[in-house]
Length: 186
Ligand SMILES: Cc1cc2nc3c(=O)[nH]c(=O)nc-3n(C[C@H](O)[C@H](O)[C@H](O)COP(=O)(O)OP(=O)(O)OC[C@H]3O[C@@H](n4cnc5c(N)ncnc54)[C@H](O)[C@@H]3O)c2cc1C
Image (cartoon, rainbow, N blue to C red; front, side, top):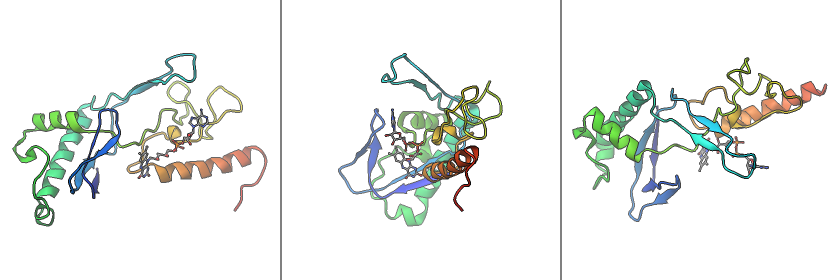
């Protein structure tokens, strides 16, 4: 579980963009980092300019629903801690403490958003039946084509994705040089 405390008041609009609130404040939230739900991404058209069909299937497993409830309870505990409670003049959220698990999950479904970390849509794996890339980031069954970005992760990392993407890119540079018969820089 990753906890965020953001020094600004904002909400996420239905189109996914953050919207800053008018009043001073802070946002406390928690993000389960190991979702077990699996979504899909499909080509919608032969026209490459058309957006793909993305179906995240969030909260489709019992484990993910339990994690969401645990996230809500964790935030509730943190918000009640004296050091945070004394900063809070008027909470904007419904009273988590009075919610049962079903109500907490309903609230999570209504207000939660993803955290801009899409990954694994083109993942590495040994078998072309359940992965797109081999361990050297080459597309299974296609010559001279690699994918080097966050989509290649076999699993999402337990935290933010920028540094792991850079690490993957540095490793890919070495692999490309090796396969070209050249020595990677030390
Ligand atoms: C709002 C936001 C906040 C984030 N905050 C954080 C954070 O605080 N910490 C963190 O670790 N991660 C954060 N991330 C996640 C992080 O930015 C991504 O995981 C990371 O950038 C993924 O790298 P990537 O190379 O896979 O994709 P991208 O960084 O998206 O790179 C894709 C590149 O491909 C280019 N491109 C797209 N289509 C074409 C095309 N047809 N032809 C040529 N080029 C094309 C794009 O212009 C872009 O430069 C955030 C993401 C967002 C959206």
